[in-house]
Length: 369
Ligand SMILES: NC(=O)c1ccc[n+]([C@@H]2O[C@H](COP(=O)([O-])OP(=O)(O)OC[C@H]3O[C@@H](n4cnc5c(N)ncnc54)[C@H](OP(=O)(O)O)[C@@H]3O)[C@@H](O)[C@H]2O)c1
Image (cartoon, rainbow, N blue to C red; front, side, top):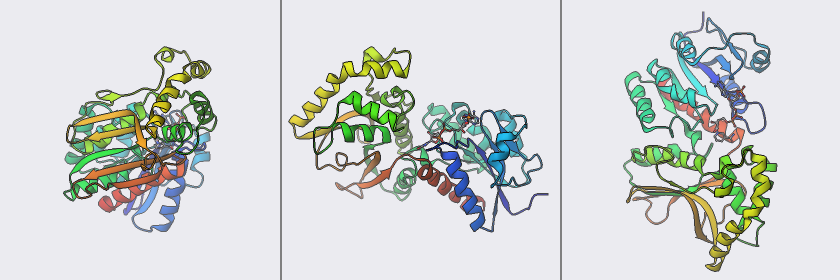
């Protein structure tokens, strides 16, 4: 029989490749479980879309060998209702860790929460999907008392969401949030339009970013601005704006109209150099004013406006001076006045993203431990 004073952890998504969150999280969980004698952190389920490993009597899985055992596991996969049912019947408190970017899992969160299953996740989909899903999630937490934390859904491990919630919960009033929310866009613009020097051609910078693994396999998935729009949707909703969806406000896509219909990412990359002059003009126009162009997200609370797209910044502005693929997020509030509270640092990577997830786990333990 499972020990009484334990918290069970179930992990969905275990990506082992470079930059993957699941493997980094498992390592951090292992270290935490060793350090914290009580409550004991035990793993009871780990799964991908094709493989699962779980103990039907909730006996702890060996965290050292679970990835190897998962790879050779012949257990039948459970559908989402099956996972909810399995975890809902557990003899202890449960934390479900969603390390995927899967929409269907995200839409199932209210069912997990309604059964008292706590959720931690870097997956943006639930919190930036339909507004009704957003409301269903928080209603389910209020009804059941289960917790949901998603720090890494914005800015990876950077403390963006917890800072915003702390500002609001302590009575400050948000006036504006502005920043660079995508490591890919940060890398592209820091090298395309650097503060010093001329920078490269747009298509060459996109190619370089793709080769270095900074873009999605099809770079259009970064250049369409949707990833940034999802993050802005989350921050706007936490700030009190009932944003309907990430496509319900102005989002500038950097995909030339003519290339939207390319049948593959490779075809897109091949044709992109033909459109370099468009981005070159934008860069030159900013340079004439002594500025540089950056891809930013902005929430203006006074006029209830959310916007994602290109903006020009003075070279001395913190957004212009960003390095590499860092994110920067500035919170303008009544208390902070004209000098915003700024959070800056790596906005992607397995280890830092998993750190946000692990810190969420610690927050859940404060409630259930
Ligand atoms: N990596 C970063 O730097 C970063 C930064 C911030 C936020 N995030 C977020 O963190 C999450 C994970 O990122 P990642 O880079 O590790 O993603 P990833 O490399 O795509 O890994 C996702 C994992 O989820 C599994 N999975 C997908 N669909 C599933 C399903 N229906 N059921 C069970 N397992 C499923 C995949 O296994 P199969 O391939 O076998 O299906 C894989 O193990 C995403 O939501 C991402 O947006 C990542």
